[in-house]
Length: 438
Image 1 (cartoon, rainbow, N blue to C red):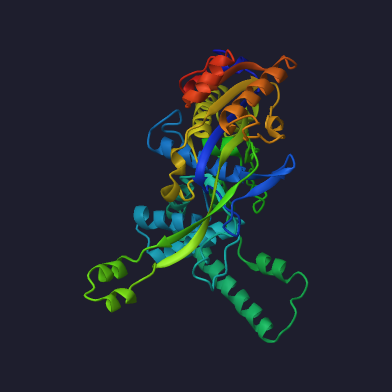
Image 2 (cartoon, rainbow, N blue to C red):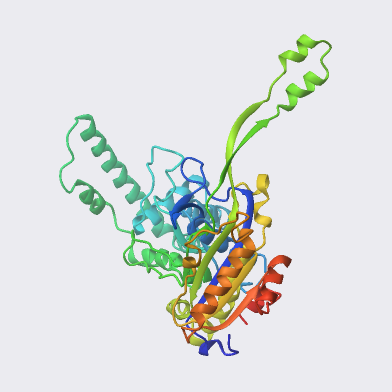
């Protein structure tokens, strides 16, 4: 990368190989490993959704802890709990009673356009039906505005809740009579509710707008429920990680001990008492996977700067923020890992075998290098890790000879065996994540 980031190529492509042993970082609806068929064989998969969330949360935690390139910058929070978060701020910061705070927060956010769960179900009554990705301080900002206009908001809220209750009673009577809803009933009900005054609605929209949240500028957001709340086209593209070889799954049988039973058995005075406490506390199976995975992501630097400028930053502010965001994104791509079963498999302690970063005028995905699965048999290519590295190096060299926009390829490894492969191939590697984008 050149010293002046404004003159660098538009896309930063990242490629990574990592070997994982007996883990289950992501599962399908049946608790089984995710997989797909590629190159005529089944491959294990770690979904891009799981990877993106791990990266986003990793960067947010570092920023909130005052660590890394995004230290002190605003980040986002994706949740259905914005009414509860707003209510908590009304309670703790402005002295509102809890029940009134929750009712007010829900009414204000609902009247802005977001739908909530069934009021009759306590678990979802105050949760929005969709996840909303908004700046982490959105609830605090909404609460501050509501408190500053408390009398006016309370008067509107009382009318809103009263009308809402009347409409609910009418709907209940119709259901009791087993009458079919008339066409347009739902729309009529919505239009019957008192509209949230414009200045209050605008305040909520401003609070939940992407603003200067760096991770929203990176990963984007889509909010169809509120037409006049801006959506953001993400600057990051992520591919599903997959094994470079055919998938092999292990169904691990486990037996969990019951400590109380074992203590009684240990202290039993005769064999009959001991027999009563024989056997495991519970048994079952868990699926585990192992393999060398290839994964890929790309950062669109132009889109990132466009998003930051759209959030109201000046050109210089957007440039500074974009450079910081790129550094933290690369760090998260290398360091972050989905946390499913992290305690029972220690999966988050894995380090990449190889990271390849380079710039270009378009994204470059090297998944095709592994369409033919790596053959680890004695007559094949050998262990998948080194074999995959050699393939990736060859693939990149081949593409680079035919594309004159590829620049500043950098390699990073945490594996001494892979380092030896790089040296044999005449490749010099960097020794830090930060050096991948310098």
